[in-house]
Amino acid sequence: MDDQRKILSRRNSMPPDESSSWNYGSQSMHSTRSSKPERLYKVWPGNNKFLCGGRLVLGPDAGSLYLSSFLIGCPALTFCIRMLVRIKEHDPLYGYGVLTTGVILTFMDLLFLYMTSVRDPGIIPRNHRPIEDEGSGSSSRELVAAGKSGILRIPRTKDVTINGYTVKVKFCDTCRLYRPPRASHCSICNNCVQRFDHHCPWVGQCIGLRNYRFFILFISSSTFLCIYVFTFSLMNLLRRKKSLVHSMSHDVVSVILVVYCFVAVWFVGGLTLFHFYLMSTNQTTYENFRYRYDKGKNPHNFGVVKNIKQVLFTKTPPSAINFRELVIVEDVVIPMTPSDNESYTGFRKNSDQEMTQRLTQSGRWVLQRQASAPQGYQATSRDAADMAKKSENVDVR
Image (cartoon, rainbow, N blue to C red; front, side):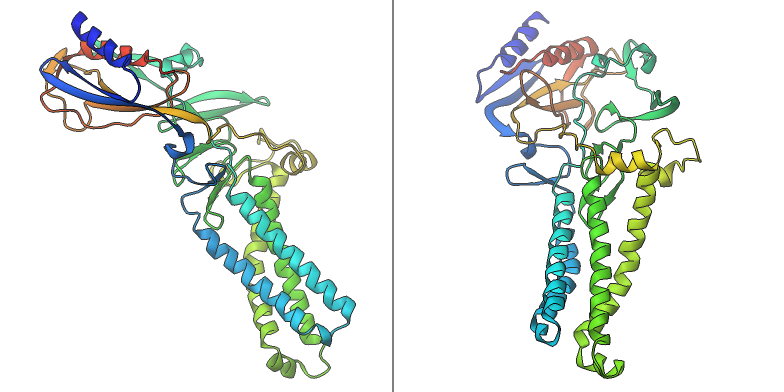
């Protein structure tokens, strides 16, 4: 046993950019370590896409931005071009005023769309420390004996108090933490998000604490732009001195814009009204559909004025994750502790050995993954526990 620990210790103190082999029982193992630092966004376990070296954070379905940009920009720019081409038919003040306002509204609508899509919505850093290091107290976990080994079993929920109300928070198996109140795990982005509202396919991003304000501005400006184009396209038809039918036959572009905006405004307008209701009652879409707070029982409701002020006029909190942070990638082989038998021959094919990939900064564990075990591996539960414990103490500088 002592010789095996010395071999493992030499593996942990191996110089950077080298490979190491050692024997454990009758099985030979091989592992490598690279000291080349990587940006965190390059090895982030979520499904996000990153641009500009990790400065811009998008969802996995960010390609929908092309469709959203087309649905907004195409009719808006068509309206502006139509006004520019026929500006001599109108009073100059009216024509240039309508054109300038249309350009500004289109620009702001697209700006809010991209600001919603490329911002970190409030991703919560994953917990990669051992669960027992969390300061949640003994009441938040239960130690259950299984044979001669102990298994740490984490309760699915625990109670926290918010403004005098008791709220249950859930444990996330993927992120290995108790989600903060109002947070939820997005299955599309594979991240826990603070104040999770929903995952919007039109912006290709989660809507959460840090981009909800821009989402409100986006759908509000989209609604106003629809009403604006609809109104002035209809006025372009009605301003003609001839009959409406004759005007429609000679200005087909305005007719198409009137029909398009009439249909679109029901969608974006209804969505805007719904989110203004949620904002005034301090609910999220997820809470509204999942919990359906009764009147007076929403612990986050502080009144209409304070609720709106909280969303629109408070400082946006900084991102909890620096995706441009330099980290060191390390691969360490760790056998899992057997749960029932004291010793055995051969691990099961897929689940009886962990390949742990660690992103290490100041000796702290950031990320892990699993791989299948070598065949013919022999170990005892005590040996495996010693190796796992030793590996937890690896300090990479």
